[in-house]
Image (tube, one colour):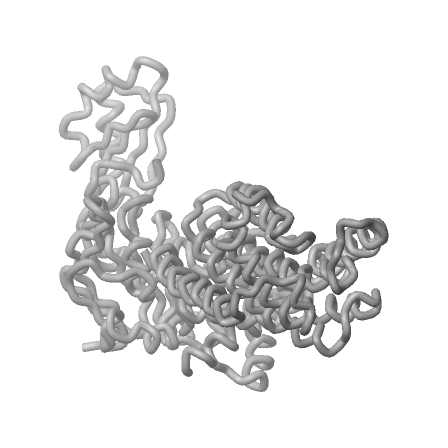
Length: 308
Length: 262
């Protein structure tokens, strides 16, 4: 069995009467990318804050590298790289200085830090920005710099809270590429996201969180197989025709989801389902056939979409 | 790493940042105090000294310069305890990043104070030397008076850091300066002896922190000029400012921990 870097049992975080994380169990194996997927407010960030030892555990047990964060958080943080949800770069410093001060916080010597900065700037594709101020950098560049900063101490575990939220598609793909390289280099990653495609692209294993609880766990493929049939037929209707059509859908698919703007039919055979639509005289304005994704899994598990 | 070495690491990052931001501090730290010295001490001073109301052993500009060392300490110390702290927890949130490294809230507070002490020393020393060139103070005592000036500044940094950590809106900082720092600056004995205040207001002045800073600084800067200071023993000023510093640090650490490690 692979070694677990983080183990949690009954992990709970409460703020007053509000339970942000509700007695969750998980094991994060070494050398894998582990995802926490869920909508805003599901408790992902609170869980990350407990792992990074910056938020006390209310109840339950957790170890990170075998250490209790409530006893010796500092020894844990020495070996962590943390990319927070909001960039908190030092805007007064240059790109290189932002990395330098974190190297110093990690008790590294100047002679160790400088070559490391060169490598990390290259990795983050920021070498030509070395002496730039941080403020005018694009969102994607700031994000990559934040990731580079998290890597300054060559961490054993890298925690990324919503790494691509707010980035344009091009910047996202570049970031995914960098994270994929880290993974291939053998790093252990913890990624929170509310993007299904991100979880599918990056995570070997993931848990789906909703309202502080873990509602499913597995590899992206397992979860799709378990909770969503292979294909989805998405139907869009002209105004007012949806309700009539819905009444005639019975038996065409394993399951259907009636959303405000469209109807989703989950099926193992999209062609047969489409034939069935014609036979029953259902004529949607638009029909789209696609593979199931984690979004569908989430919809199945919680009855709600991911990004409201 | 010990708390001290971690705090020094934090202070080091402040030094690096200061290399980029010092220009913005030149006016408040160095130019404004000299304007006050020139306008109040030298300008107003010629009229005060020529008049009949100023019956003290030192010229008016000397009196003002010695008080300004402490007042300048307060201004800089208060600035250091407010805006950068608000930036760390609200505007830029960099404290939240710092605590994901081996550093913790305690190291941030001590690191900021260590840095603040260094900056206060430099700022007040420059002012002391300028006062010497104005002919307002003697170089030796003025240099020694930098120490109580720094103590005054640190006491304000500590307490105002704690206060800032209870605030959720940056606008409260301008309220602080308008309604606390400016009145203290004007009425704590920097520009005229407390005895010039109405009788009922004098006890109020005696309990204000800047009064103790100004008195202590003046007692060091103007040895022998017993007619421009009160007879309150020096140790009372030191204990007052020391206690203010200690309480401020204690509360700052607790409040910062609560704020950034919820």
